[in-house]
Picture 1 (tube, rainbow, N blue to C red):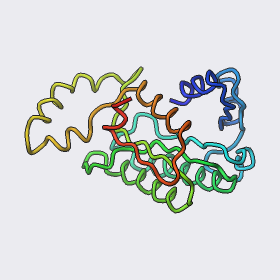
Picture 2 (spheres, helix red, strand yellow):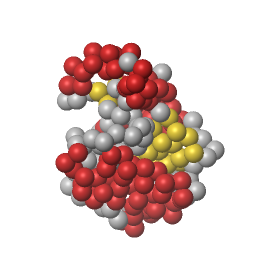
Picture 3 (cartoon, rainbow, N blue to C red):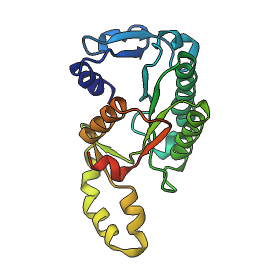
Picture 4 (tube, rainbow, N blue to C red):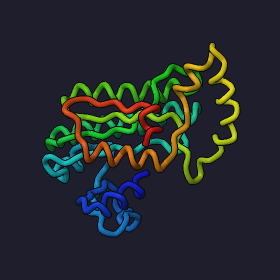
Length: 202
């Protein structure tokens, strides 16, 4: 999502700074200001965040699955906590966080728990924030869930499974991009939560 969002923001004439590891600057879209730092150490990048900037947190485990329980805490949660601290120290105007749907599930409960803990830390920071809560984002390299769409449709018709099936609907990458841009351009006063039903309206 990061490179796509950067290109959109640059086309809208935003000044975009992106946190990268040393040596990865060349992977950023042209026009991006690289910030060399450690995503797990707030002190390595907090001073590079302009006052009143919008901080967008996108770092997370690639292809999350039930077997990556430990990585969710070591990468997703740890990086989010460092980012919250850095954004607060810098006086960011808003923290935008890609979370996950919080409808209870057994298969991904560890992932949901880590994202919920990050949300709690963000709330405690006092930063104006937007939580965007998709379940699965369909896009390049991630199209296989489309084969399950007929099953989800059937589950939506069954009274005992309808509520959960609707709460875990798929969203598309282009919808996520539009939601992210909307969140950046329209900061909330406090905490704003954008659930799947709202994401799909984009």
